[in-house]
Length: 78
Image (cartoon, rainbow, N blue to C red; front, side):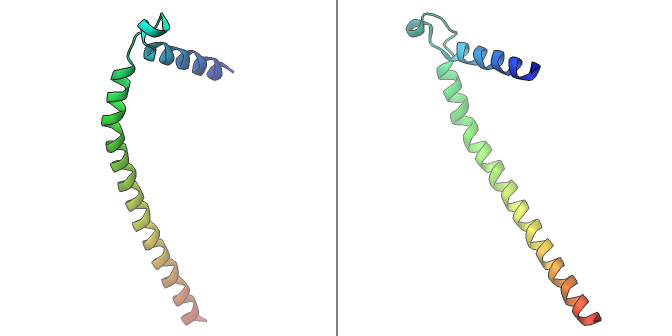
């Protein structure tokens, strides 16, 4: 329950920070800064996700090759 309340407080603080004070009447007006951060961060995160997917794919291919090799060894031993 504490985590939900804390999450709601942080969410409200983030919305307050993004709201423009001239339109909403209150807020910090960090909306443009948040958009600039997202514009710069999205490509970096996309690159990291792509690299992570490549590493997972390589590990999966190695696991499949090892499983195939083990199955082949079991056939030969029986």
